[in-house]
Image (tube, rainbow, N blue to C red):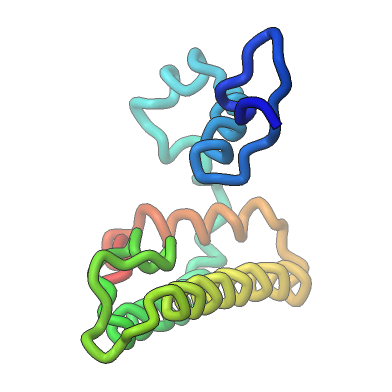
Length: 156
């Protein structure tokens, strides 16, 4: 087989690693960042995504986000997950005492988080379709509610 792709050299064979390090390596290699643009906007990152006119979609964005939050919070409580990162990754440092099959529990958490995310995405698309809204404005409202609105910063 040779070396994994993240260790390849100019000579010799390599294979594409399916492990986390290989995946991380491929993401890093394809990561293209315009450093000048980011540093110019870094003083006010909000300006990148907050578009004028988004305000009319706050209500629906808050409803979708609160549904998402309640599912994630319920998931954390049911499985004894302590942090947002653990919930999103489906990998808890400690599980609820009644859980014995951690692998099965992790897959269940991953499935539920993916389901919650898909529900938000489907809600976003329905809003755009039903209200004949501009996707950029709806996305901007969703962004503000999920990442900036102080009342909804965390899952907990």
